[in-house]
Amino acid sequence: MKFEEGLRKLEEIVSILDEGKVPLDDALRLFEEGVDLTKDLTKTLDEIERKVEILVKKDDGSLEKKPFLQEEP
Picture (cartoon, rainbow, N blue to C red):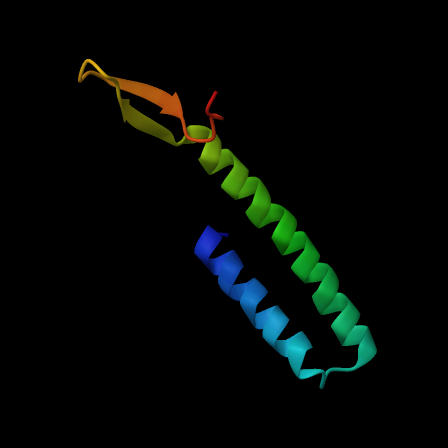
């Protein structure tokens, strides 16, 4: 499943649960599905963040690649 599809499905689940009109058994099933989707989407985002790099312009004008989430000293 593509990230966008998973996110859309998660939004649908949240909307349905927010309405509060589904039977408890169905709500529990939807909640569990939402938790699983959240785990999958978080894993996908973590993988993407590891791949993303930024270019930082140094004082001498040259560019340096750094990991996206690198903490500043």
